[in-house]
Length: 77
Image: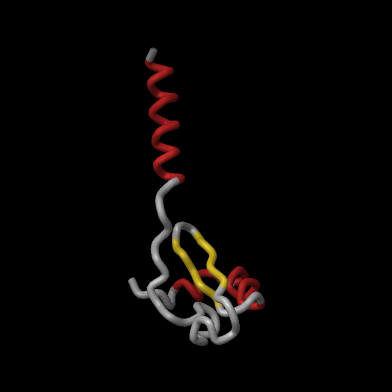
């Protein structure tokens, strides 16, 4: 019985964590280039460690992935 309750609890907890919305992106510019979002076409939206990020173009994806800490530091605390 305890095992069943433990499994059920962990499943419910996992489901609630999985459905948690990422933190909203708080700025109106690309996290990598600081270009205005939309200036290079439709912005690219991704989620990194629970934080929504927005980039102005596909090349910025590789730049961000090479050093995410550098770019995440631009976000307001």
